[in-house]
Amino acid sequence: MIEVKDLHKSFGDAHILKGITTTFENGKTSLVIGQSGSGKTVFLKCLLGLFEKDEGSISYDGKIYSELSTDQKRDLRSEMGMVFQGSALFDSMTIAENVMFPLRMFTKQSKSEMEDRVNFVLKRVNLPDAHNKMPSEASGGMQKRVAIARAIVNNPKYLFCDEPNSGLDPKTAIVIDNLIQEITDEYDITTIINTHDMNSVMEIGEKIVFLKDGLKAWEGSKENIFITDNEVVTDFVYSSELFKKVRKMYLEEHKK
Amino acid sequence: MTYLHNIGAYFLMIKDMFRKPTKWSVMKTLIFKDIDDLIMGSLGIVAFISFFVGGVVTIQTALNIDNPLIPKYLVGFATRQSIILEFAPTFISIIMAGKVGSFITSSIGTMRVTEQIDALEVMGINAVNYLVFPKFIALMLYPFVISIAMFLGIVGGMAACFFGGYSSIDDYIVGIQTDFIPFHIAYAFIKTFAFAFLLATIPSFHGFYMKGGALEVGKASTTAFVWTSVVIILLNYILTQMLLS
Image (tube, rainbow over the protein chains, first blue to last red):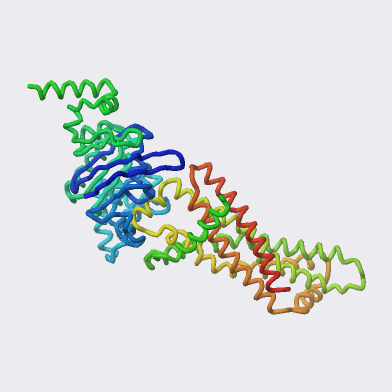
């Protein structure tokens, strides 16, 4: 479980995170949503330790991150998988080499064992024949799936995804969402996804944290988000006519 | 304050370069790749420049000696001294700051922009060690490049003498053997090792800590070239004062 207490982060005079407290449970997919500039990416990068927090605490299964030594932090990070917004695949490596990279770095597996594992995860993300392609030869959706494969290849305890379906067509976006959800369930990973894609919220949000101006404005499940009367949340989530109709239908159905 | 901050960050990066080393099986591959990119990939341009600049040094020396009392072998002597003491170690290092330095800054900077460095750090990898250390080790072979530059510079001078008729080959060979001080070679290689360290670390620093997008990668490459050249020139002065005076 990841516990965040009173997290603050500023860059110069800009106070980005203004005291966020929340928890992310094991084996669940949690979504962090909010408008652009609400502090989602900074929040995620603080969780990953890529940004140093100013105040507050972040603990991973009881281990307070800021109290760990540099080497302990690096060891903890080796238990994390991350899917970056732009996939962040290594340009100089093939897709198979990208996926194999964490195994080469952190395990003592033989080459054939690593190849077996790479074949397995590439098959798992529906890319059984992409081994020898370079990242530049892969489409956006393929790159995201490779990034997911690389993130899960070493059986991480925590999976972080920064807008995993940004720039993807709706169909591919749903495929990616479902893939992350399935992998989270299969491997009992603590997954946190940053998104402002409302389809993701409706599809996979077991827990949703809504950020506004660096503060946690609301949290709950995807069922709760249909019935909440929190105006800040409803203004954001139901800003389109389509989602307003979806909510209306949901509420009418559940009245009966 | 920014300069002080950057100098501090640079030395912290160097300290980090030796901490938590990357697995040897992976590091070995990275070192060989960097030897190929940084050393082998520079041989062509270094050979070309050395040969022709050696020729130009010879021609200019010969054309400026119009006193019949000055022996002709002085052309070879002056060419050797210019090439071994300054041209090969310093001038080639400035060229390498442009060629190798901008390559290092832009490749690391692009990794920063595309979040590949973040990906390494999230995996718990010491990104400075992973990216900078192999370049540092690869550039420890830089004296090999400078040896070739010295040799080809002197050969270029000899070719200029032969084809231009500025002095006989025999005079030139006598000149390059006259008053040879072996410590000058040691001095040149001490400088070369120091410059190799700067060539590996200053451009890496500018790439690693750059902020922004593609435009800033270009700016960082230019800044890295300027600072690497400035530090090479300053260090050249300091080392010359220390070792030769």
